[in-house]
Length: 366
Image 1: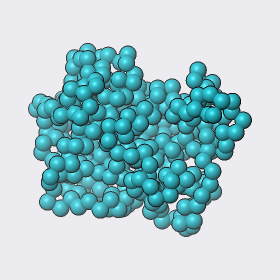
Image 2: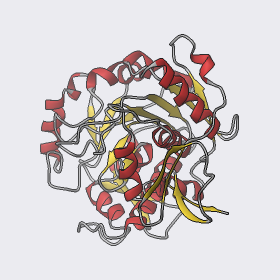
Image 3: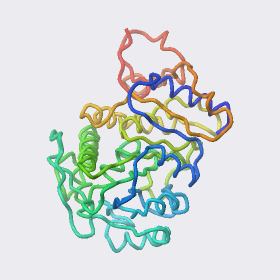
Image 4: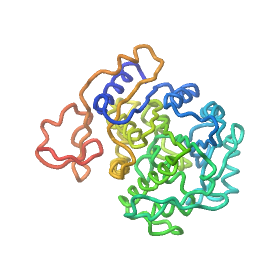
């Protein structure tokens, strides 16, 4: 990311964050093993004496854009952590424990840490505060073995959820195979693939993410959140042949608030000034077509976190402190029938009175 673009990106997000309100989200444009350790340390959560789980996606194939072992190794080993995963609910390279362990070995994760498939020996139910769709969250039984979870997500698009960040990594990612089906079906089945209730699915993800968060917020436990914004394909790491990313790498963000963190990442995408070779519009379309921002909105409604945040830049680049200056928000506007009306506009002036989709959220213009 060039210096001019970097400064613009940071100033846009600082405007969106309302200068000092809401949760703290840390940012670094440096995507290195050292930067990953540093942004974890900025969160101020100690791992000493804790049984630590680092939740990642192990990826559907070597072509998937999962976070590579060499990138996460320093953090995982610094924390003395196990890498944790659960089996998938679709037929693929990770749908059974045997197949998943083969994939884990092939990807090189065994070379840096012990990898725990948390639903290998069964499941447990976590209570949910929102029972509109799911009555509980079905997770791998080994979740009980950990005091601290580092939710380490690769932020990217997703063919069903619109995007995947820490909320998805904590809901679908921590759920067992049957739990994944339960969330995808919006609480209707633990054995059948049902995906015809999009908002129900997104709301179930939010409810399940809150269940895991609440579990780790019990006395003696804790949880932290990190999103890595690289290889920003419209497809998830569960896709063995993902589309080539058209948006350049942005950075690493971290917070104690998963809602604020995913919202900050969405803002970076929606406010990106696209140019040839660095185009956010495919990812924006994927998110909007699947109503992906609703997961974040609903999670806030449930009390899981806040969409208001303050961005704190930890980047080592010269002049980074000058990035925290005010600039106008940028707007991507669609009609309710999906027609794009404005691209990276600095004002909504000129729109007729009515209801529009503005940066992925429904808004009434008066």
